[in-house]
Structures are given as structure tokens and as C-alpha cells.
Image (cartoon, rainbow, N blue to C red):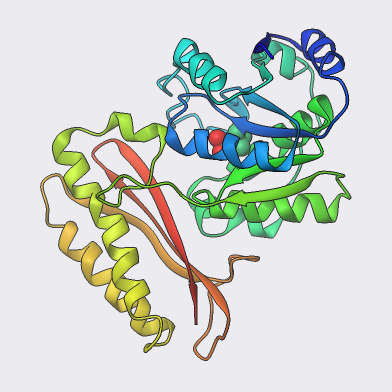
Amino acid sequence: MDLTVAADRAALDKARDALGPGRIALVPTMGALHEGHRSLVRLAREHADHVVVSVFVNPLQFAPNEDFSRYPRTFDADLRACEEEGVAVVFAPSAEDMYLPDRQVEVSAGGMGGVVEGAFRPGHFDGVLTVVLKLFNLVRPDVAVFGQKDAQQLALIRRMVADLDVPVSIVGAPTVREPDGLALSSRNRYLSEADRATALALSRALRAGAARAETAGPAGILDAARAVLEEAARFDPPLLLDYLILADPATFAPVADGHRGEAILAVAAKVGTTRLIDNVVLTL
Ligand code: PAF
């Protein structure tokens, strides 16, 4: 079936009706699609008969000092990628179509939205959950796929679905990495060659922490990861650490000594003008 591009909600309704019977999977994106997004689409196809990809750079989840205006927009290439991956519908609304000019109500990400990543990006997760709930209401998918790379976002979407009885199954997809370990991200295209060399410290730090998971407790894991990040703070350009945390993957509360079971080792740092995040799930 050919790819249909729906530029507003009326066109989306029409395209959705034309899909015929079967399960629908939604892959919400902000465009600038890369191999990581393609892997989300492939996973979505395993869970549904039709895949809808949304492409919308959501102004609500960017603070005024963040990169909304320079966020990469590569719509033609995104459409080609969707076509190659067998996507049925690309929903690419304008901000005017998504948000009423006098809108008042937003989803609150609650306390969990204000910790870790949320402490550095106040309001970010409210903006994410608001647009994701709207996309769920507009597309009405059976299942939606999100990357594990945005681990706190994934955990909060699971929370929203549970807390607000949203009838959509959430599937998490593993992080896709470059051969040298760098997690794929639309923001990687901002990195100069020198930035990129420094940025590799994120995944190196996570590997160093993970290597201690069998023998060390939370403090030992964090120490091993921090040593790598401290070394990279002396590189040119330097790595500027926002946070390194070992947290409960469902709540993002820091895990205490003696914790058993899964824990997420998550890091965020700036390299040059680019802010990067990465994480790995460990079993303690
Ligand atoms: O992960 C993203 O790309 C965005 O946060 C999402 C889920 C598409 C909402 O705008």
C-alpha cells in the first residue's frame, strides 16, 4: 500500500478510515528520522497491521532557551524512510492544527516529571505527555512504540497510560547505537568531529558502570562511570555533566545500596552546544 501523508487532522481521519481492518501502531517522532526511528517502525510492524508515524516538532516540550527553532527538519528524507519501512500513514500536522490558540489544559507529569531529566528541563515532560495523549486521541492506535533511549519519557508514558486509563499498549524499543557506541539521536547531527569524540564518553561511562554491575553496588557502579566522565571533562571540547544517576526504571528515584533487580544507569551532558542523553538498564 502507498504511503499517505496527512497534513491535518481531517486528512488523518480520512487516511485512518482507508486503512481497513487490523491493528494500528503509532510511532510518534519529531522527524529527522534515523536508523533508531526505523527500528521503532520495524518493531511497530511486528505488533500491528498498519503503522502510522507522526512527525511533529512539539513546541510545548522545548523551553525558550532550547533548540526548537534549530531542531533538524528533514521532511522529504523522513517520507522516503517511512516509505522504505512500509509505513501506511505519516501524520505531519502544523502547530496550529495541533493546539487551539486559547488552549488551557495540559497533562501534568507529576513529581516524576520534575526529577532527573525533568529537573534540568522544567515543564518538558508535561509538554511530551500532552502531545502524546493528543496523538493517541487523534490516531487512536492499539499500540505505540517509543525508544528506550528516552527512558524517563518511556516510563512517564507508561505511567500516564496506567494513571489515566489510556487504551493503548506501550512497547519500548532498544537503543540503537553507532558501531563506536554513540546512541543514535537526531541531535547527533549538531556534533562536530571533535564534539563527537568527546560525546563517546557517555556510552563509555555506561559500559564502565555496567561492567561493575555483577560485583559492585550502586556506589561502585556510579564511581566507575563517573571516572570516565571526569576524564572527558578535561577533553577539548569538554564534556559538561548534567547528571549521572542509578535509578529505579519505573520511578526514576535513585536506587539505594542493597537494591536488587533492575536499575537504570542514566547520564546527560553537554558537548559544545549539544545536549545528549543515554542510559543502560542493569540487573543488580
Ligand atoms: O521522543 C520524541 O521524539 C518526542 O518526545 C515525542 C515522543 C515524539 C513527543 O513529541
